[in-house]
Image (cartoon, rainbow, N blue to C red; front, side, top):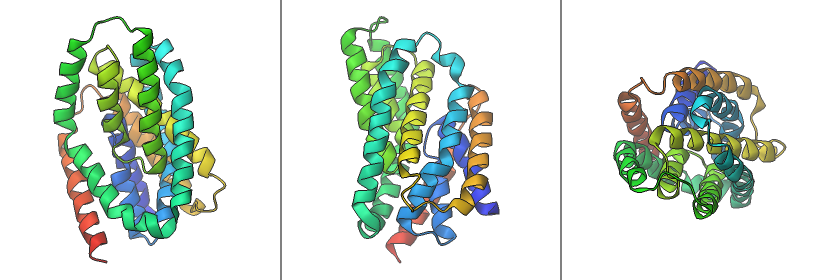
Length: 250
């Protein structure tokens, strides 16, 4: 319980800062003996309050983005459900074989975050400052695509959404980051509700992880402008690579 609570605390903070908190909490669940598919389902359910907390902490950066928020809400909800359904269809055996590859791919995404944010800044600087109908439609499509991945696995979802939104949202990085956080929250919550009755949730650990994720996300979200996540991001990448190697060697 101590390990899972600590991993959720750090994971909620990472999700609020850049995404990828599942790369801490998912391996922690594996470490205490939870099989891969139930670990992923439990992780989704347990971290959903942290996404909500992180979004609330960044709500001021969502001001003036009501149209965008409305546009991404339904695609994020449907994408999260679709990703959750895809996870259940995949099954334990196939998902377990995909785990190390998913972890490595997510670690690459998290490690590339500084370069991705510089690229995002260059991209948004090239946009006009007025959203068009085309921008809004493309934003909805981007929300759905990213949310399907989020419902299936989730680690690195924030980086994927940042990359997609940078192509279609004419705004600055802080406001795009807030929109990303909202999308992640809706997708994760939709997947969590869908998976709630799947029979794969390890309920005994959910309260500890949920509280840890909420506290971590709130603290990080409140200080998102002043926190340098480089050290934490590096630790996440190192841990993830070690977990993937250990999984390959099983």
